Amino acid sequence: MAVDQLLVSLVLAPAAGAVACHILVDLLPPKAAVLGFTAAAGLFAMAGTLSLFVFGMPAVAGIAGILDEPVTAASWPAASLPRWLSWTCLLLGAVAVLSALATGRSQHGSVHAARREASALPGGTEIVVLPDGRADAFALPGLPGRIVVTEGMLTAVGAGRQQALFAHERAHLTGRHHLFAFAARLAAAALPTLRPMVTLVDYAIERWADEQAAEDVGDRHSVAHVVGTAALAATAQAAGATEDVSDVPGRPAPGRGGHGPLLPGRRRAARPAKLRAGAPGRGPRPGPVPRRIAALLAAPQRRKRLMLVALPAALAAASCGVAVEALMDLPYRRVFDVGDS
Image 1 (tube, rainbow, N blue to C red):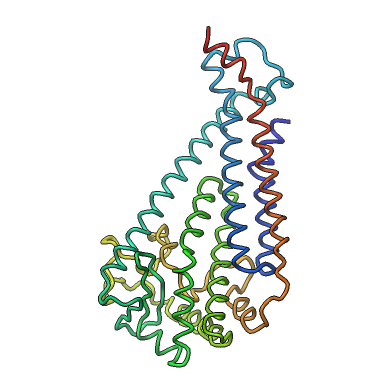
Image 2 (image 1 turned 90 degrees about the horizontal axis):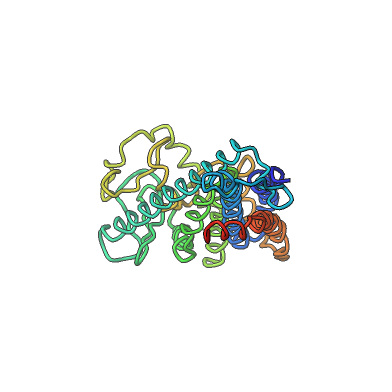
């Protein structure tokens, strides 16, 4: 039973939650998807980490002398684990905590670097235009946040659709979207089974910004045009992505507080600090950008379908329940007796 609980908490429930979110991501309103998926990922990560430490307790108990007397699986199911598996759980729990702390530190540093970059940009307006022919646009969280766009992007989208571009990036700032991306990455750092959830949350964040921009400008077709233009420009520029971002006027070079376009294997932790309008990536299914465009060209959802969030929520609750059940099985009375003796 103990091994079954461990598998449910670490593998089965998170994997089922990721599959459920994969199915629901285009059925739910994007804001509800972001909130629900992020909360579910956090609960899965906490439950999995707690389970690792609970099932690692027999190893600790053996060192403390708590298990000098035989303990049956009925009185403490975790004690029936092989000692090597208990030590493995304890080690994996420590790795999960350290990984989450390292990711949190890196993400926190990237956000603060983005805020320093935002405050260092020229001018005091919300929108900063860089004299760069490449098409690029992103939001830098800060107090206040800044929207950075290149002249190449303004030319690519055309004068009539620039407000849609600004509205999309402004939606990232007002919605504090980098915090949700931050939380999803923390959960995946603690429990690698949740890595697919990071992609799902990122995709839902972009859909949230799309819908908010469409509502603000009152023109869904303009936002769809901006998303497609940005994606095509990013694809065309991918071959030349090896150019050093220090050549871009007005943007600090990486390593000095900058957040230039991320190259493969280079400063990936800074990604949440920069939320792009249409950067193509790996979606939950092939073609995330075409699906975003199709959603914008279609009529807004009339049925909210908010109850669908209950599925990943129920799976996350089940994972937490398994972890709490294992926690309650710990022989607290025996531990206290040893402490008093």
